[in-house]
Image 1: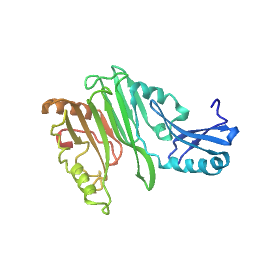
Image 2: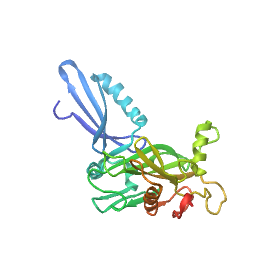
Image 3: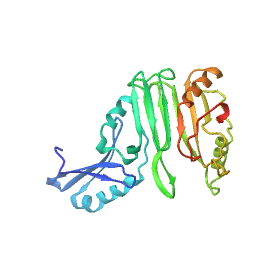
Image 4: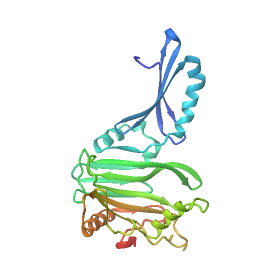
Length: 272
């Protein structure tokens, strides 16, 4: 199609930057329009083709509206993440408050206004083939709907099951069905699988707990509405002590900056 006739950026309601490009096929009055959103390792895209007038007056406004309904998580190897984070003009505004540092054989660090986490090679290998998934979601924050990270999964290698995870858990409104209430009670009550008991499933072993198990907001005496669960998974069947040591090593380098309105350091088993 050659060089695009139009090439500009469009920002959706969540400050994600879409590259919009159009091409004309003049002999049959057709127009191509593509909305592309950069992600680690490539991009996702929406394409429409129609008569020029229909594209201009119908499809382009439709695609702009549809961008707000596109949900995706950001996944890639550390190599792909470095390339993606270097494209600063195209990054969503959510990344302006997130600092990700990946040094092969030395350090992984994630830092945001909500949570900080890091580890070294003594806990898990750090290479170009290590992988990171940032799971984004829509949720309420101080009365406004935001699009932000609610899950972090860091893998030793994209082809293995060895990984750490951190997930943001929110207390559900009373109006939601019992399954949501039950899931929250498992987290807040440190019930299985959040009780630090290693368990085997299929071909891997997992262990998990909750970062702050007291569930109390300092100074208010009211239950916390946000809790972070932390887990570790590895291949094969592994003993409890080995799994617990791996989890403890990761927890020592985690700080949560929300939920309990303070930075709480993990100290001991059971999330307390």
